[in-house]
Image 1 (cartoon, rainbow, N blue to C red):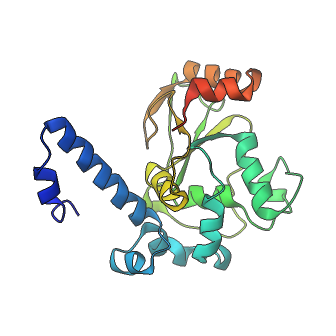
Image 2 (cartoon, rainbow, N blue to C red):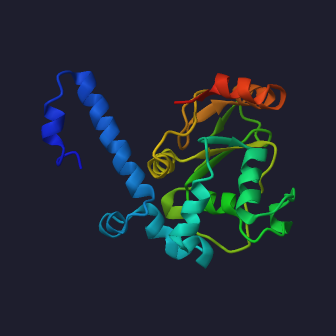
Length: 219
């Protein structure tokens, strides 16, 4: 992809301009390689979703169902009730069980995304460590067992969209979604537990608009 755009890159007048163009090109390609409705991209370059779809239950193996789900995300970091809201909306139900394995919802989108490695999570209260790692499953660890070992969406966890999937969503929406600015999001990056506890406290006590203005970049 960079080779194909080398002439455009060489025409950049400054190192900064060149760096910004390369970053933009990489992000555009990452978006297409994570998930795309474009059959030519999916078949030629082998998007990550299409590669792993064979491991999914039939419902999630349908790219239209997957697309419908990810279009519901308006930000790249979510708290428990936001994750549950997406689950309720997708399943068309009003109430959400506190135990996902006992929930009557037909589909479990948060578990599915986590098991694909496309959604990470941080458990705030389950760790005695001073720093908590952003946990994403490695692509080689991806399995999906229907109805078993579900990710239990809970109040002490924070959920993070994989950066490549974030770009896919923005490509599909043709606009930016809200980007978290409190710390850098990414696999295995460690965040101080005290910082996470402060973040969760603000989320529970601040007015939504003020919280979003403090922690999210809205383009």
